Amino acid sequence: MRPILLFALALLTTGAAAAAGNSFAIRDVRVFDGDKVIAGANVVVHDGRITAAAANAHIPAGLPVVDGAGKTLLPGLIDSHVHVFPGAQKDALRFGVTTELDMFDISRDFKAWRAQRQSLARTDEADTWAAGLGATVAGGAPLEMAPPGFKVATVTSVADAKPFIDARVAEGSDYIKVFLEDLSEYDTPKRMPTLTRAEACAVIAAAHADGKLAIVHAQQESMAREAIDCGADGLAHIFPDRPADAGFVALAKAHHIFVLTTDDIWAGVAGTGLAGKLAADPRVAPFLSAMQKTTLLAKDKRVMPHWFDNALATTRALHEAGVPILAGTDSPNPGSAHGVALHEELQILVRAGFTPVEALHAATALPDEIFHLGRRGRVAPGYRADLLLVNGDPTQHIADTLSIVDIWKNGYAVDRAVH
Ligand SMILES: [Zn+2]
Image (cartoon, rainbow, N blue to C red; front, side):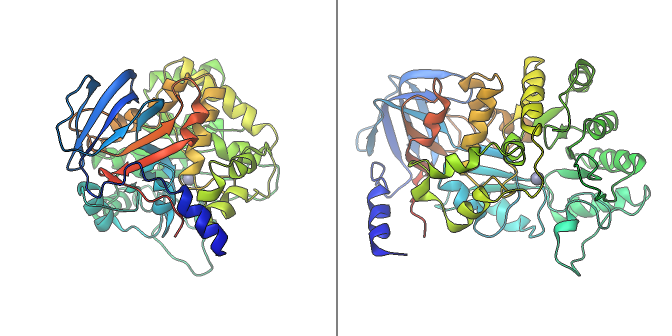
């Protein structure tokens, strides 16, 4: 790295929360508490937990105080659909994403992730919940991307569903990811083997028998219907192959499913160029790691021009019907990147008809309610002090989430410099 750039990064590293410990206060700040706005609030943090968040809350003498005038304090953001790899959680945290929900990974470092998310110690990484291995068939999604010779457990029959899921749960999976994908939604001749309907239903039933949520990858409306009919709790994407019709919306509503959006990926596949603009934003560019730049600027080989508009229409229709929608990014797929892409996803949700407050709820309190993440995603007494302070007012102008002043994880100020 050139010295001049190092110097610029040093200047950009904010010092407002320079206190070394994890007890401090923020005075006179607009708070988005996970549901609603509290104007002119004082927020007090003791030993990594929020102890007060209200207008006129008492600030004990002796605490370091950050001036919040003109700024907005948000809960640390939660990305409900990522794939982790070494360094990913660091990249996430430098953009205020303090918790990530992994939706298939091979590292399966469950023990370390669990210890970290229960701790209030200083860390430079977002906390991780994870599906670990998903339910898929040999040669099916996403194993087609694995290097030659790579072998993991797959589902081989209906009878195999229960032992497969029991093994995932024994290993530490927090929830179960299921893949329904044959690639027929793409304009290419390539096809892929996938779970049969009976196998998918058996896998979902086994997940429920073990007390786990089942979240299904489906990029086609027909497969999303199959997943819902089989009792899936959530969809991992908005399917982009066509806009949802009234019948689909009614089915989703009747079955009380939730949906993770990942519309940033469909923006990329449709060739909108949104990710390139994000990467060039002066509030973003200095803080991107080499990996974030690479994945954000990567282009999917397949261009499907209508997929973004289809996904926006479905996101809008499901939201209007009251289907719970959680913000996810599917990072590090082409056009996304850990941390930073969630800010783009929030802007996309607003484009799809969410109010800024509804979009922020989809990346804070709502994932905590659905995935039971242990008192995070809110600025409220008793909650973990994972916090994001920004200039301006993202509850009115969603893109202000990118105007980051400070990030705290477990009450400790986060160093935003790329190391
Ligand atoms: Zn994914």
